[in-house]
Length: 305
Ligand SMILES: [Zn+2]
Image 1 (cartoon, rainbow, N blue to C red):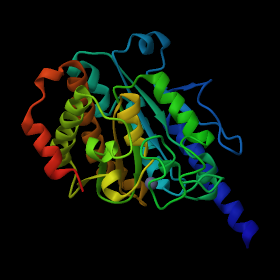
Image 2 (cartoon, protein in one colour):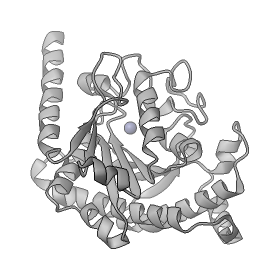
Image 3 (tube, protein in one colour):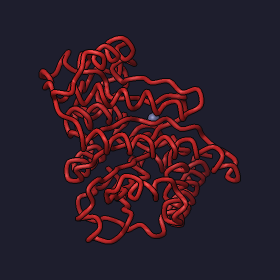
């Protein structure tokens, strides 16, 4: 029975890889620096548009990863669906560049935890919860956060991708509760971390304000933070506070009926489009002098748990 279960999981994984390859036509695979899992599976970073010149000149780069928890199959279904839409030119994200008047590119890491995906486990092969292994508030969690921050090859690879990528915004796709998990507040992060700068506080307040405003695009969704949920070492906290990247975790619903993907996923596409637009505005316009007490008050009242 065990052998049969392993065979089935492996088959399911292989089918997913085929599904993904089909969906990612028109994307180029980035080699070097993407890294490998404990069992040597490559973390495949896929880029659109494919032209090197376009990427080099792009004013704003966006990053979307899924399946950091290997058993959250539906997260790869979403990213594969989105990649397919982009490659066919049918996605709202295809319009982003002309709508904002800036060149943009998208990088996807659809299977961030290949070993966990293969065994349908939340954890990686070391039994570490990878979304507790990043370097902000590391160890402040009930799950296994690993031996130290970035102790795992998968998170070390993602760290390198984010640091090299200089993304305007980065999204980590999870499942399946109706939450957008925003970066933890600076009060939460500061508890065991260095003081944050005035500029970072301004950007934080503005980013939270954008997420809250865009949240109306999602049906019955709530905003959370890892700090508020009692979790340290989350991707979006590290990306925001340490890698200067506007980030959040988007929890998507699982869709079993493949014929129904558009209806289920279009709301997330609209949310990503709005979020990326907000991120571009925020990265292009802010100055520290624009910070105001009202923004700070919103953060204190509604985000800190
Ligand atoms: Zn998850």
